[in-house]
Length: 350
Image 1 (cartoon, rainbow, N blue to C red):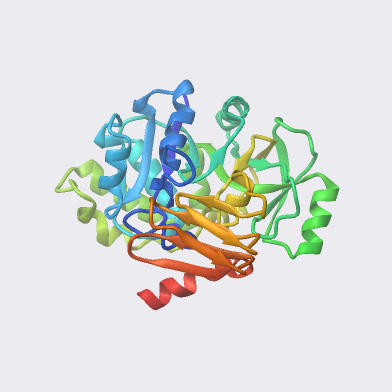
Image 2 (image 1 turned 90 degrees about the vertical axis):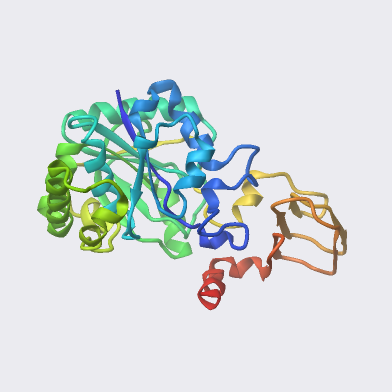
């Protein structure tokens, strides 16, 4: 049986003011009646049980996640004592899982993505599990539907879907013309950030390609096994903070020789910015996407208007190509083509 590690420590800054550190994107209910993390959890229940589902998060968000998924035992909530990116989250998460499941085959999933073709997704995971059991580190590559410049790409040996392929190279986010070329060639796939591996295999990969993560994990392992006062995240904070802040892609995936990719078409959407609402929801006659509030529009088109609740009517006159996000405390107004710059506002708030 696969063991799942759901990564739920992000703050979703590109969705401010709807998303905050204490109430991040994965906990919002603006994309569906259910939160994204709830949908992720329910998506994998048909192929595993609760004892094989772990959620990696932080001290700020852990209580909210427990309320969102109350049926998950608290021992399955892994609280990271610092923000050290995905390589440390995977190293620490796999270590904590090993307390309960020896040499587990782990599927690392994001908590804040949508997947439409869930049966197909579970089928692909079964394929990935088989490959991981043979000693590969497996990632899922998403068949691109358009030349996206906001994703990294994976170059596969072939374009065959639902079959394990050799990885030729990981590619950084491309400029538009290069992204168009990737789509036309057919063997370049969006990097989904989903990984499947055996614990022993990822340990060896850290040892070979990111010694810092291996050594810190070993130090943490000795602390946990000694059982001397390791009861809370605070007890391992100083050691955890020795991890280099590095993504799993840079730490391992771009260097390891035993990487396989399974290209797939599962209706994946990482809901990476406000522009995702245009892909997910219907538009009105003027091409506006409106969620969670009442809007009166006059000569206004191509806008995205999102609220986290029911507020007074909003009136737009002669407004086009804008993102407007509303909460009880804050309102964001920005041009759609600058929505990736929302983090600049966060830095000023800090």
